[in-house]
Amino acid sequence: MSGIQQPKVVVIGAGSLFFGRQAIWQMVHSPHLNEGTLALVDIDAARMEKMGLLAEKVAAETGVRLRIEVAADWKEALPGADFVVLSFAADTVRYRGIDCKISEKYGVRMCSGDTIGPGGIFRAMRELPLILDCAADIERICPDAWVINYINPSAVNGMGIARYAPRIKSFALCDSLHMPHVKARYAAHADIIAHAKDWTADLDAEFDLRIAGVNHFTWMLKAEYRGRDVSEQIAESLRGDSAYAGMDGDKGAKALHNDAIAWQLYEIFGYIPTCVSHTKEYLRFYQGHGRLAEAIPPLSIWETETRYDRHEAMWRQVDDFNSDAIPISTYMDSFGPDHATDIIENMVGGLGQPFYINTANRGAVSNMADEAFLELLCDVDMRGPRPRPVGEMPRGLRGLNELVLDTHELTAEAIVKADYGLLRRALLTDPLTNSIADADAIMRELLAAEREALPDHWYEEAVF
Image (cartoon, rainbow, N blue to C red):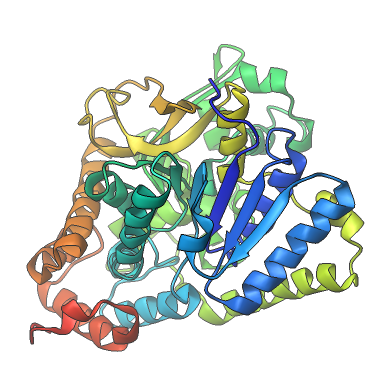
């Protein structure tokens, strides 16, 4: 079902290297999008100029009639928008480093630090107020636009929009379950097919994969290939752990020992975790407070300097494309589809492809609340996402998911109400918290260290 032709897509936070370059690729590549408008918004003028120039060069090189707009203020870009993608962050590398370093002092280890634990809570404190300010402007300027949150913690921010800006149309995304690419990697990893590059639409139709849970805490509840259960085969492919799990495409703390951890969790719960680079951070087992299997040390801490180096290398690549040090003719061979613009193409073109989306459960997981904000396989068109039935969440996993949901719900409510007591309750509900005194100390130190990035109301009373 399609209600528009050649949409206007506004990307707020266009300097996001993990999204902006792929969004340009998809907007140019898709015949459903490449005569529309791509509006790039970023408060960093230099980054905005670079991404705008890159988009112009790629469009010109490929001969498409995609219109490129740039703006420093989202209010300038929003008129006429059909889709608004939120991908901004407040100096996230720096602040995630602060979150992880201070939390580590008190025995909380985070390999990512942006969705659960003190890192997830404080990132939401930094981002959600601005997200809701943006939502208010969207409701006023382009009330019919679909809003796609791409900012972590995706579940907190997604449910924050759904709960506290309910008049706008929205859902949330994470690229960890971008299909069919993830499905193809599982099939190749388990030798169901020889290589992920061999994946075809026919194979996709034959591989029935059902995943559910809170974002970054999702589990493979069904895996059938040509009618045969291949869950055990996929799990067995994880047993030969190398230091870094190749499926995560990383060589840092997030990728370390992921296969061994996935196998261990499969042995415990009977289901495969599908976002191990984050899921291992949601569980108390790998915090180092008790004995661990010899092959699995406590979580390594998210590495700030390495991330700065990666970002610098990505910006050098953008500069090289813009200066023609790298031929712009190679751009379309250098990247691939992005999850958000893939879904936008599907919605506009009425292509009928399902995608994993963070949205209200609405009965898909039959033993969890309808309003539970879960990552689910959805049919999606211009009416929005509609989750496909999954069945029950197994006991144990359901309880752990509910704990994560409560933490996220409390975090969003605390931020909107500016309530320190609720914020403290969120951290003390969080599955990584072991000590009331340590949690209080973490909150005090993070509030002091991140004052310039947080709303003033957190400092109006001497509560910290």
